[in-house]
Length: 470
Picture 1 (cartoon, rainbow, N blue to C red):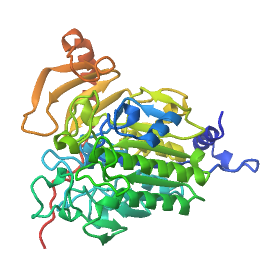
Picture 2: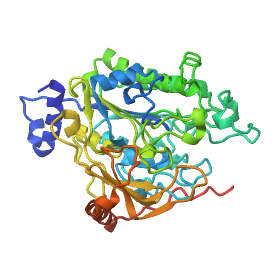
Picture 3: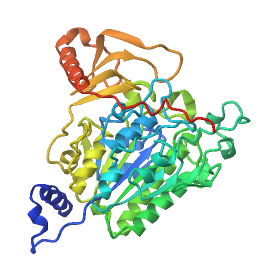
Picture 4: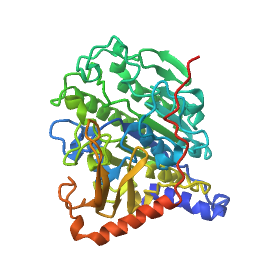
């Protein structure tokens, strides 16, 4: 058994056998560091290791080659605010009030945010002495009581919401997908802590500056456990790349932006290796939802999957998921286990030896058995929400749709009775409805849905509230 694996097992065992920490013959092992790198609107098919033919992503490809690539990894929501809430709390966003049918995300005039009573990964890890940093896009509430430093993060540097918000009234039509967009068209603020340090933010250098701040945090806290949540602004539109990456990709500006994010991941891995921390750090890369297809060439690709951002078809919620932990995750692993971004909460707590909160439902499960190669994932069921409505569900390889609708556009929702049924192992593009041949499968998944709904208590809607004028 490898040394890092021993550390993890020791940490987990110490929960059950506290005396292990007090033995004179043993020295408590340092907890494992955690870095979550989150892209914004990156599709399942946008990386080389997921099959993109022209976007070059050598660092993320290397991360997959040296670690584990998930084929069935999901965001828990179809758009960014609820997805990020689920990632950080391990709970479906319907429970936290971070979802709404009209205002699908938070806006600069929103009065709500992630409720203060929610426990984030950062808040939980701080109880074990972790240094915590949120670098990049937050989008869980811009008012002081909702900001990262009010949710367990020691340090914050980034944008409080999406980079297309605060668009100036004199910006030209089609500004968000204009490949020659100007940063001054978007009056979005760059913040450090609770202070605005630049407005409008120079978006050309955001990825570069996020990376520099993440690496500085690693260097400054190398002697204690740390958690870095590096949430990139891109490839959400409008797209901007630094001078070094502009006009470099065969895929155009979108490719430039993704390749710079790939560079960023490489810089993080290099920093960990230089500090001798790579074998004691789990790095996980994923996206907050699928690609924003209506943005045309300024949007990404879901590969063979159907539809994209905003929809509960696979392309809207199945996203890249890559784990890197040298010396612990065996190189070149491909995991077909059903997993989602809410599972990162339970995984983080397991790494630090922290019990999962018992005072609230936690929907995430630990991925450690998969990462360590000791067993399959604990998840067998996943529920697909479009805003506040549960409209699809998956159990094992089978997925049913009660309601379908494109992510964006004028198409109205289509109700299916009986539900559509797809075998995602055989038909990941969801082309062939096999419901008439498997009524027993539909009935079985329906029981799981009813079981889940029985004790579901939706949280107070945080997205509908709007700031009142002074």
